[in-house]
Image (tube, rainbow, N blue to C red; front, side):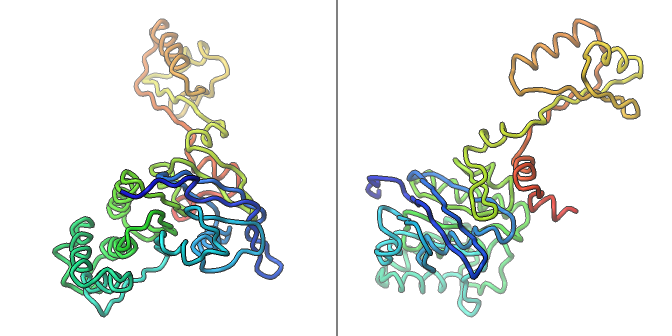
Length: 319
């Protein structure tokens, strides 16, 4: 058990960073409680990785202040590095060493001692479902296995705060979900996770709070639920079995949008149970023959598009 922090795990005030004439971070204020997941979203080049590099002491900020685990990032770099782990966009795995040897190398860098280092390596191989692959070199691993090894290496020193910079980029859906389960387990044990991602469903699944970074500033911040409520568009789609039923429903629900070709009626919905119950009661009382009903709620893709004017990464890839 680690001792609880007196303040937030990560805090910034007026954080600024520019590269030449290009301002990447323009006065960022942030407060992340201990034992939570914070997800930073943004288009490519928005400054997500730059923020991770500043908070992990890899590059200095141009202005403002930042603290990690109560330590000033600029003045107490050694103390910050002692309590954090960082998994970047690109793997830090050595392909000439076996999985177990990679972990033992990290243990040696943390000065864990020979016996303790080997115990820790075996413990992490088991935790990340890599025990059978521990004696193989990573070149024989799948992408998901290599990413899990990369995460395991980050955890050798038992960091209290972990920075995950787009940790599931390029992974198949099954491997992504395996990484999500690992992150949930870490947070359940009290670890704080700072996550950058372009996968909107990833932030929705994992994050306690989400911020959208665009043109150097936070353009939205809150829980996933709070951000979704910023965007209109919730609706119920009713599919009917006959044109007559659709016509009757259109008369019953003025303002709803009918699609005569597909026999559907789109009814705006505010997401409240009371509203849904009232709609179903009206349909039932009228004896309408509804073949199918689907409910749509705005997701973080909708939020991202509405706020930045660009679709999320998954939709861009699909296009």
